[in-house]
Length: 206
Image (cartoon, rainbow, N blue to C red; front, side):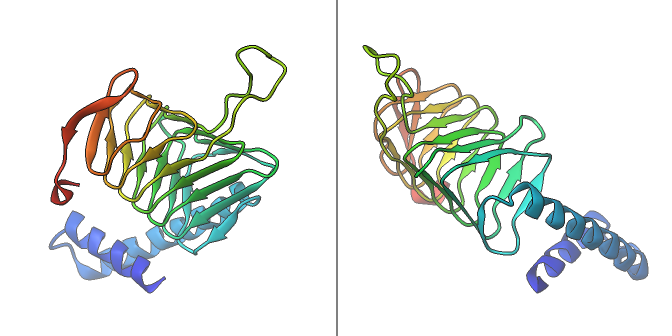
């Protein structure tokens, strides 16, 4: 909590450099009250999840359907402003979201296992699904399920799709509108349908 107060104080100083200190202190109090209210709302919205940290916040109301396990780590932000974030976990399924990751309006379906690492960015309208829901030949069957792993510092851009059995490597970037059907190596940019490597990144660029 001390870190949060210091962060907000530094933000205010940067936004209103040179302003009378008591006014900044009042603004800080209002900000902290607002954050406390948002914290309580977040606890209500994510009441079916296992929250592994205190500094987890939502903005807007996400849709959460949890019949399995959802683990959300500290400093995760779940935004539903541009698009509503939708988290759906089936019976026996697992969704895990690592520390300081931002979910900004994706749809995530975990019928088996979806693991998202630390410091990731998942953009609006992204779809992440670890199962087919139907078989090509038997439409009444559940189809195949395979784990999706998104490593630390990955970024999945707007309207991308990540399908079952895929690992997105550390520091990788999935370009907007791409469909990821196979593993993405660490520190690469993939784009297209299906997604292919278009660029290699240096770790310092991420």
